[in-house]
Image (cartoon, rainbow, N blue to C red; front, side, top):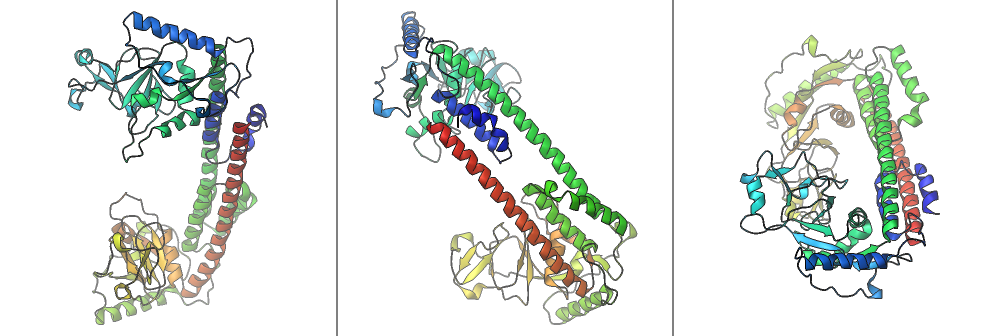
Length: 549
């Protein structure tokens, strides 16, 4: 496979997550290896360009515009990262231009010296992924402060390069003509004009970024020095080939932009179609309308559910249909839910008498305007908090520091992982009378737990359903939509919801049907993961083949 045939056939892999990002990386990698455009034997070789660069550096020294830089050692043949094409040269970056630190004297601007407009004061956060400087986030200093700085002032054609924090972030300063850099950055000023575009492409390529690891100190706050960057290996092509490479990279990056725009457009359209189809199911106001909505989904099932997000939406729709009574047919011989509510009241009264729970205040009746939809015959609409009681975790909550990967008793907390770990002390376990729902007050994570466990840290509510099928109560809880407000409390918002209760026999039929449909969703997600894995493997194989060719 050649770069040309790869690019012609990239559309087959473009649907793989991250494929366009990987394509951008490959374009830069091929560019700086000399594999993106053909070499022209008529080009003046890079050795001649290097002579001109050295002459320009000597002129700047003679005119007192730059200091005499420290000599750099020659590159040994065994040091070069890869073989470059004929006519190219390996050089050290310090021989290509001047590397300038920002001013670190007492005149360094403080935040309280920033002004609304003036001279741009550039830091790492102003560098956008496309290598431009974001003027919308730019800080400014006064001309007086700018004039007081002794170094770190940019010129047109400069590059800025990050030495601390997000090491290696790079930007071209054009079209800025004036400005200064913070101490986290360094200016790279090529001795020869027009070299900066190819230099930028190299520094932002995977091969250019690999130079960082030769000098990164590996600390918690990684940083480089200008002297380290001077010793970067840089593959220098002939000048005319640089121009062809830069032009071709620009063309291909524009293609990537179009691919990403198309992906976004297709994804937005697909999400809208999926939401519309599923919404028609949950809002259907009669058997005929529901059947029409279902037939539309059934006839277009494969193209509708082709992303993890669409399958997630399908799961939530299944739960919504379950609690609306639209998933299984009603049976008039079932004991109605009104009888079940009486049993719930009796059970709650018993628990109060036994001192296991406190007597709660009567809840207000449900107003007609609160009713979200017409519930099926034999069902009841109640306030969610009437359906369970809380089990206190007591003082047996454990800290993360004593949780192990193995042990006698599982630890359940409000995190995404079902079991967060284990401890060895069974005396700390909560002995549950039956399956419970663990609700994450901060995270909104919902877990069905049918074994004794230890409560991890803080923030969980343990809900024990009253006279309901426990699995149905779990599905009912998951069907409730709660706006996630970050690390705030959400339990009170859960309690504020209404809940539909079917007859107990129908609850069990619903659970069985939901299990079947969730298994279908599991298979869909498995197929999606496999397709994405195969696409990623194909992409990586092609990239490896091209890179090694």
